[in-house]
Length: 218
Image (cartoon, rainbow, N blue to C red):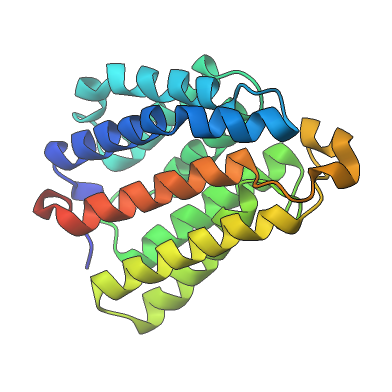
């Protein structure tokens, strides 16, 4: 069992610091990708949101997992412009709504992620195949659901999740965007990685590596 709900404050701080550092380190990459098919502000917007979350990390570390997710999601909604704030906010808040009161095992976390993904779909009125962050989130969610029933080895499970995230990201390269500003480009959006898919892929990989390498998170 992975007792996510009872994560130590040290783990929550590691996750917050790690994800904020990830976005800071890849800000220019996200901006470059967005400059090709968007407004060239994805890196800046994501950094603003994660810096805001980092600023309240002491408060978040005192909350239970569901409450921390909700507050982080609200912070993204309030601090981040463009589509990123509403979509990332919806993911985190959606997951918080499905967080059980007791300790969370892996199968319960699957339900939480599914709820978060569903809320992203509703907020963006989109689904997999439209060159968005969902092209990473949906495959990862499905892989996690499958592995929760079949795999007990944590390292293998994390490896599978990372592989699906990377595969989903790469799939966006050949897609034509049908949502957001990128959709205005029509066929010219083909051949570029989606910046939202890139940011969520980077974050998933960061979270997986933190959980895998820190005993505070198990």
